Image 1 (cartoon, each protein chain N blue to C red):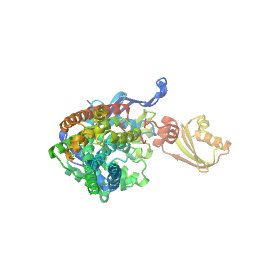
Image 2: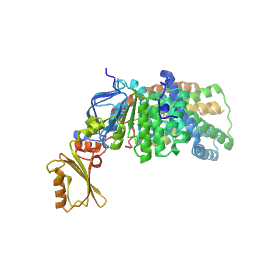
Image 3: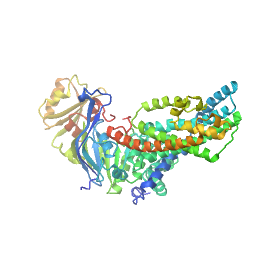
Image 4: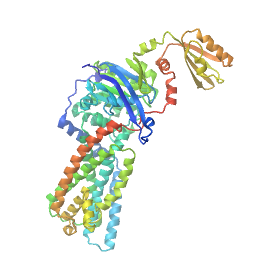
Length: 285
Length: 342
């Protein structure tokens, strides 16, 4: 190829508006859906490690003679921890890592919307994590002989999708706040990990809490999502549920709206603030 | 409205230093840029030359809409960077030296494709351009290599391709050869020049603290120090201003306490810079007249300093910088605390 030939291009066709928005979502989800599968260590860290915690709770429940549904509760909770871990480490604090790598400046400098970048991160994370969650459920079911009886598939799918939308919406909102943070982002994410395991009832029904504590914990979308799913897939789930499934679905719809709209406004505000204060670019130089 | 690729007027940026106390206002602010007035024409490869911490990166950040100025204004491709960043962004791109952008788990081609999508490029067209550009930079056989497996030099070539890929009207290169070896730096410089020569409607603003890079590449250079533009012209014109002076480089035995200040006190010695070398010293002189050399040699002799070699030479941008700032760039960098990461 001659020297200058490949450096001269006809003007590129570039889309704008909603088509650019969609392209950005797909492009940013690509590293998560395709790239992350190339690092096989996820099988150990994201399936084997959560299974250890699940196993511990299963053995405790069996040792104290708890109803067998509790084993199923724990397996489903274990699968859902994968989503929480993903939101915490790959959504909320992600913009800190992107800043350190130099990607954040490139995202902001490009004509795309940062909301689309965050949605791409969420979509990619959701798809990649779903693989891990399914693996945990299949392995847990096989190891501990869990029996599922789904009372309504449509409601189950609706609850799962709403819980995920609200959860990743919450992740996007907190990612906006993390836009201003430096290394402390890592510590904050670390601090949030365990309390949410407890508050969301990953390994036990939240009905065990006082009503007001359970209500407060319901602000975390996984709490009601998990509670509703347990009610829909275990025969005695309804008796151990916190609220009626329909009420929980309604609250999840509200949470979806609040978190997604909140993320949009907060991101807009934080981006302007970060540009004003000079916090968009990395600190390595 | 003007048709400059880049235009700034009284541009300034003051950083608030985090964690500083309100009562100590003087120490809580840092002036990174002050009254910067620059115009870059289309078709021009413009260099910002200055030591680390001079304000070059701050200026690039403002021009690429990543940082708001605290005074003045800047336009890129005729649009104001603060008032209409959404109109500036489709028209620009930026590559920084030593950057590790993209994702190590993705291949070179995948990383480039991903960034092309953020500009709304058609996938097929983007892939064709990626192949063409990677072929041009000699990376075609690494197209399917994970970017984490690339050496620093190859990675920087990939970054430069990312900058070229969207065919920006204005491309910003911030220290593009930072951390590269001599061969890789030369390759990158060749590529930059070729990209500019290929289309005269493009403009490129490059920051560097390498004199040779600025001299070899740039059509015009602005010399910047402590946030202020000290001079702006073609490298030839900048050097021409010094051509009435005589410039010498003298290698000597150890200095025996001699300082450059002592030499500058002599008549017609405009600037003197002493550098310790292995087993001796190097003295760079800018003299108003050649006859002043005799005085300098006398002082060296009185101090029992042997002259090992003496060379008369043509002015370089380093001399221009020394003339403007009073110190060599290397010495400024040693004495200044970098401010660009504030």
